[in-house]
Amino acid sequence: MAEVERKHHGLNELQAAVKFSKMVNGMSKEELPKFQVKPRTKEEDHELYAQAYDFYHGLVTVNWHDPQFLEAEEVLDYMEFRGFTATTLTKAKAKVTFEEAYSMVFPMMDNGKFRGWVSRTMDPEIAKWRKYLYNKGFSRSNTVVGNYRHCKYVVIVEGFMDRLKLVQLGVPNAVAILGWKLSQGQLDKLKSEGVQYAVAATDNDEAGRKGAAWIAKNFPTVRWPYLKGLKDPGDFDKKSFLKMWKKLEVEMEKAQWDL
Image 1 (cartoon, one colour):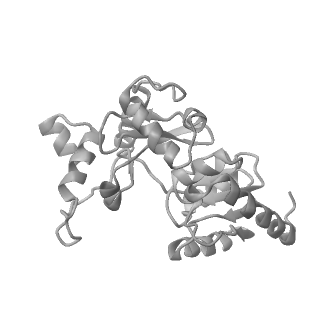
Image 2 (tube, rainbow, N blue to C red):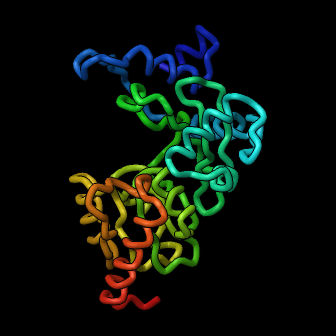
């Protein structure tokens, strides 16, 4: 899809995805167009990585404490409404794409290495179809977003924004697996850096509980003690976080982890 739009209409990956999202919005699953995906070569993977790197780093750096243009102000207003701060956006190196449907973009850093970018829509209608948009060629299966080097335990969450909220609340060893289930590649990366224990903070729903059970098969694990009505860490505020953190500390002590 993106390749056709780029070749015939001069659109980049993000613009093509935006056009596609508008096209399929409101379609049933049966009506959605189906595409055949052929395996990429290593050379194609390297080229897609270079494109993602150039796209993100080619965007203007934003002063989130004093945004100088309307698009950045709109992103800041949206993120502050969701409980994020200008300082957090600055530390996360958030930028603005100037694409209406997916207007904010973040670099995905895996132990300090750029692995690609992720863009988040602010439009609730588009979010029904796809909240997050990743660069073409990005592989979730071998990416762990966060800093987990020299960590005996990590707090595992699903979404990028979930991790961002926990880091803002004071949990530097939170990592995002960008889905409900830890992949083998992600597991291998965590263990290769010496991670021995896990707090499963995957979403407080059926899929998230399945994800937590899978994590528990691979690490000594404590489940995040969600308060009633909270679905994921993106919903946390300082008050609710502190209540849950106290409960978590008790459970970790009971587990007798060697930290």
